[in-house]
Image 1 (tube, rainbow, N blue to C red):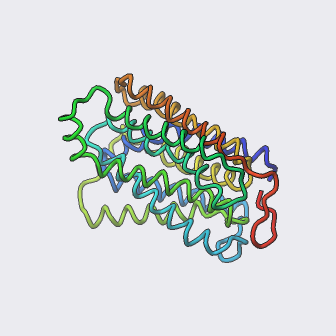
Image 2 (cartoon, rainbow, N blue to C red):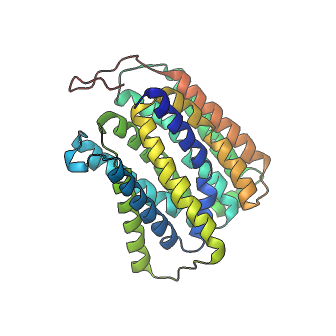
Image 3 (cartoon, rainbow, N blue to C red):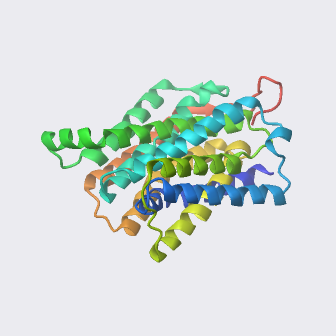
Length: 308
């Protein structure tokens, strides 16, 4: 696949991803394990049928190296479970968008981690300032207008959700680079989603609870499964491995803005000035991180193959 086409698919994936936080929150209200589990299982099945039609090599016949399947697959599975837990278990919809901003630290973390996977020129000053701006933005989005007492109360109640979302940011940055470094011609997205869905369904069965699948839930379920999940992650996997990772990394910095715009409209939540300011700071910080890391024009993998 040509680099330009792969990059375009990655950009379309980012567009679909802008819907993810709000849609995940809505379907999670039906059941925080069961509904996302059904969605991921359906998405995984659709992606595996797509692989079969396009004769994508199965895992045992692909050129992917073992770290992609074991390390990358484990990071993917953990990301999905943590993401669902963080978004679905927050106290109310008002926290969904600040949680999304924490998750969207991953573009800056991807660039921070890039030198560990590929030969890069690194300017630590830009990286340090960029990361600081991202963290400040996340804090402003969460704490704007609160006094110390309110901050302490919320911290005691909601710290697990925010810790999970920060872990998600680290995991997705790692997976994206692992797919590019070791993925070869494999497309593990369908297998990984199927495993994630089955894991969440097992958690639902073990934890119990009724699945409130109503007619009103059908549209967000379909959007979540087929667009914000199946199509988006398939396209990102192609873009991350075969596209211009610098362009995609830079455009991914605007995910917070897209997520806040869509989420504000879809969830009908009034946003504080701190949320918008935090969104701007997270975006600016990620752009500075991009300025601080320049990938070499040609990076040779350890096995001698051209990596980019």
